[in-house]
Image (cartoon, rainbow, N blue to C red; front, side, top):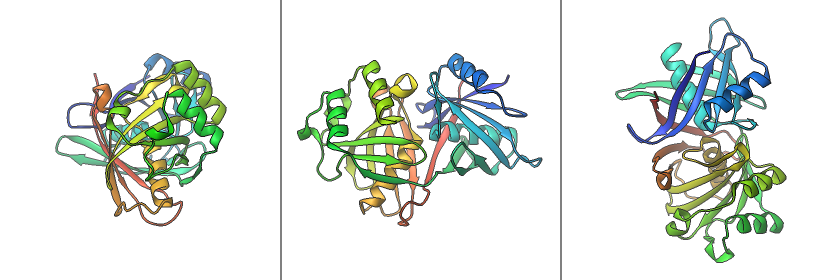
Length: 279
């Protein structure tokens, strides 16, 4: 089995979020995919197989070391890079478990970049119980929250909760117990919990706890970025059609996620980034 390892949303030749990518001739059984993902050990591995003889449409499933994930942004960007290298630069349709999405592979001077079209987005306010549980997990207080964007449940192919913090220092000090985080995310049906600081209207610093997949933190999370974009749109945030998320800085894995969106409520958003091959 040819397992390719790609860092998605890299900042030049550094950082990014590692993902495994496996191109298949046909679908594999869940047990095999789960075992391969656990052996790879990255936060996600994408398994893709062609659905058409022209290889322009692919079935895709995503597995973390401990569970299947309905949608993974950074693994989709990594898949786009592999498809661009092994099949050809261009646009591909992807059929994932609960949606039809797309990815475009683009040749850049320093390698292959990719741009995905997310599933539809939606958001809602968190309940008081949800908020109290998440604040307790991270040992945060209500006064740590930035009043400009209220805590929210957000969705863009998978479920997340986002807390917007006032202080960059508070974000840098993010700590939580992995087992407790995994239990809470299972209880609330979340893939990650996203902590964000607003640098300005179109630049955000983020950290994403990914205990649901057995990983303390993701250095770049495209699915959460898509969900967050939908939330900003729902809140009529002045995004001017695009914004950037910096993630992974506090892990020593600087990552850049570029987001483009329209003002149409619930519509898919565009997530793009650079990639680099890993040995």
